[in-house]
Amino acid sequence: MVLARASVLVVRARADGQGRVLRAFLSFSSSFSVLVWEIVHAKVPDLLDQEGDVSGGPLFDCLARQLERGARLKMGVDAPEWARHVFAESCTADPQARPSFTVIVASLEEAEAK
Image (cartoon, rainbow, N blue to C red):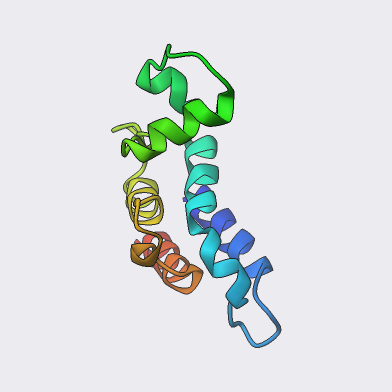
């Protein structure tokens, strides 16, 4: 649960003095999900390796192709429940369906209270 507490602090550090998350930062919840993935797995994420992409070509073209196909990093089943939940919600393909950091903070605080 220390990781959940640290995650709350990271998100709060991006809030203004009123405790409201800055609007510009709300669109980066998918980046936060990758950070959670990196912390839980203690390694650099590699979508191409995970998906077995051997098509070659420029790195960003290969990544874009995988993302367009719907590929996403996979959170391990041994990851804490809160991490799997935040990750799944935050890296959905539809940016409009991703939670705001206000929702993420509430979710992390709820996990910490358990």
